[in-house]
Structure formats: structure tokens, C-alpha cells
Length: 273
Image 1 (cartoon, rainbow, N blue to C red):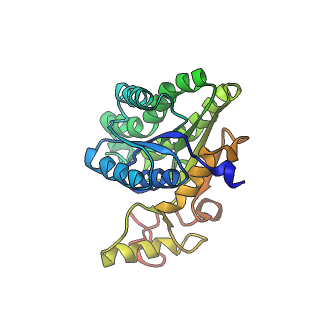
Image 2 (image 1 turned 135 degrees about the horizontal axis):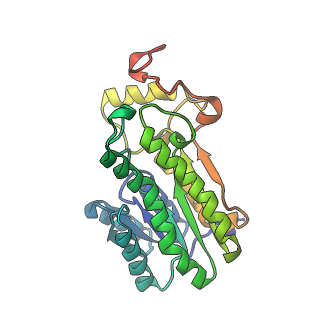
């Protein structure tokens, strides 16, 4: 079983690898034996992640990429293939809340809509379109998208973000069905409330603990906890899995963790505006 989880000799591209979930998945895959191409818009951050991958004895690339621009995603894939000769796994992780967060639906501009949809949903499409021809040519591969629990419930604060992430889940299922006979697996990770960084400020810690009270597990997740799931989905251990969405949220969606307008800073019974 442990041999099936090994990523030794595999080459992986991860977008949004400079921090948070993307960085932790990159390090987990490096620990499992993979070489990592780290992609994000901030060069300094991906260089730092690449350095940590190299410290683990693996090869690493740091490729500045704006995933909302299809030509840059194409260039990312081309550069990784030119360096290694092949790519075995692509993790489309990059995403952001965007300018439309917290706005009333009547106040969301066209620019707000496209900004959020492009960074979250269009980027996943661009990634699939760029990597699948290579996977077909080499006889297989693994594509992993990262969505959000927000895409599986109605959140009035995150109308565009939730819509985009719901699209990522459906995109995953649709593409998976199209390419399954090509020995290409496509799955989706759906995180819930997960800490993107270590907290130091007392008010941040208090607010996070307050949010965790309403999750069945009794706490929010930590970024490193997505690493083992990413390794499993990227490895041969999941060879018969495709078109699935794997929720990792401490039971939040299953338990209906709190009303969508809950304001953890308002105390017990507080509902946000």
C-alpha cells in the first residue's frame, strides 16, 4: 500500500503554490518523492516554496504565472515539460475571493464578476485545456482541481466566488467523464474553513476559535491537512477514482455548521449583516 502512495519520479505542477494550501500540498508531495513546479503571481513566495522542496531532496521550479490568463497557463505547462520531459500531475489550486466579496448582488459590476470567475473557474478550465493534450500524448495523467465548500451552499456574502467554485466541481465531473478512457483521472478537493497561515494576533485567534465552535470537529482545519489528501489523489493509490469531489471540512457541510449569515464576532446567537 505504501508503494502505491509513493510519488518518486513523478513531476507535479501546482498553481497557487506560494502560500497556504498550495504550499502545503507542494511540500507533502515533495515528501512523497515528487518534483514540483511551483506557480503563482508572486515570485518571492514561489521561490521560497521551491527552496523548501529542494531541501527535501527534490527538484523544484518557480514559474511566475497569472492563472487568469490562458497564455500564461500554456507557458507554465510548456516550461515544465521542457525542463522535465513530462508532467504527471497538475493541481489547479490558485483562487481568490475577488472584488465581489461581501457585495449585494445589485452592486456587483461586470468587472467584479469576471475578476472572480476568471481567477477561480476560468483558471481551472485553462489548466485542463493546457495539460490534457500532454497527458493524452504520454498515455495518462492526473488533474486535481481545488474548489470550496462555498460552492456547495448558498452564502449571500460570496455570490460570485461560490458560483465560480460550484462551476469548478461541475467542470471536474464533466472533464473526468470526457477523458477517463484516456487514462486521465480528474478529481476535486473541496476545503472548508482552513487556516492559511499561523495566527499570532489575539483577535485572529479568538475569531478562529469562535468559528470552529460550529464545525462538528470542533475546530477549523490546518493547511497541512490537505497534503495527505493531495498525495492520495495524485498517486496510484487512487487509480480507480475519477470525477469525484472530496470534501475536507471537519464535517461542516454534513453538519450544516452555521447559518450562512453567521457572524462569529457577534457572539452566540449573532447574525451578521
